[in-house]
Length: 220
Length: 374
Image 1 (tube, each protein chain N blue to C red):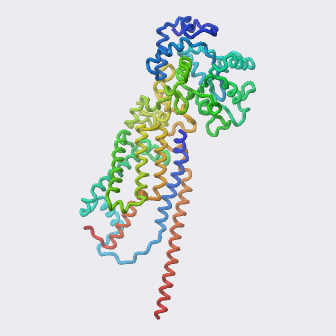
Image 2 (cartoon, rainbow over the protein chains, first blue to last red; image 1 turned 90 degrees about the vertical axis):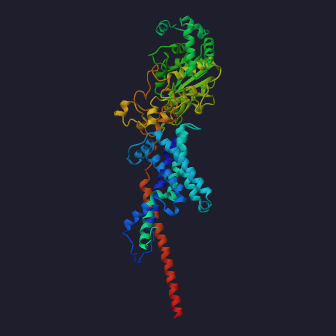
């Protein structure tokens, strides 16, 4: 119980403080970042930046035919664990209550049993992603600490959440405390690693779309 | 039967009388006694064969001297154990016990009461049970005294030659409400002040059967019952209330009462959302229930407060869901955002400054090179 009190109290406060400071730091850094003014004349095929951004976001939802056969599994697997994570985080009642307590917002939830099933699928999907990364030589070579650690801090909350639900190995309050502490670790790491794409994925894709459109890139 | 027994309660019990003698004297049949032994074995989660051991152990047990110490407490534990609504064989056990010292129940007061305690300690040296409810203030011995004796001193001298110590209620077991933040009296649990093994019967108050069952166990067997990591008998504190709660299926199905007066509450749905601490509370409320098995808080429509767990008063609020942060986890959010924005802007400015410096150096180099060419 003392561990749970620590997790629900100081640990969570500290993690959220670092999370907010880190995310704002990253966004502020981008906003104020030095950029070279692009004075070049745009391509004749250049579209309005907003339209090009939206089109790029949509286009990157599915791989180009050229790469489809090579990346289809990873893409589908990626969708599975991303959607799974979204369901777990935003549609499990205890999580919604956590958010409601923090910011006052709440919405409908799914039955807990259904979310448990989604969690198992998500867990398997995350393991598959790691296996793919390790077994693929090219991917393995370009993988960094950030890739593995990002995977770990994503995987642990799902794993500890499931274990807590199933009461495996220890008392529930200990398992719940470990789950919350794993979430704290995730929150602390989000701003400083690749999981920052939670906030930036559409920003970077928009930027890329606008830039490519300006340069006149064509879809194959 | 019980009323009949009550009518025939003797004024005093003979010291050498066994429980078997006493029950026989009161007209309690062997069958009733065996049923009680079987019931006691079952609530203690003992195998069926233990029933006969309890029966023979209890029948042969001699009058047990018990000293009940009350420190920083509210007398709720005594109210619980002495509830009068269901006279039963447990009552007979309490009649059988020689309760030599108990503020609320004894007739004597002042120095006569203390003399009774000292006499019981002297006459039953090494063989008396000490039951304690209430916590001990350590900040100042004067915060709680009895007959001019500080709680700490009375505990230390009383448990010194006790056979066993039973801490009753969350105050005695974990500090309880007196120990709640900011703990003005420096209240601590009994177990922190004695090297003797302490059987903790937590709860605010504990379930009567947990108290009577544990005492029955001590009377029947030489040892103490199997305890959990907090020193509580596993028979009563082995499972979380959530795991044995009849509303558990609603939790799994995602059907929750959102207030105490909504449709979900009327339908008897899970009370997790309105703050039930059943998932982290270990007690037998959902199985033994209260008032003779009539009901328990969740059945009455209120979430579990977690009263049998350490620090239950400071778990972040009775009506706050367990998954919510204990405190205001965003209390530093505004400051964090300002610091983050300032650090981000400063980092960008530093990069710009560095870039401008490099650009100037490059321009100077180009300019020098052009001059040389000219």
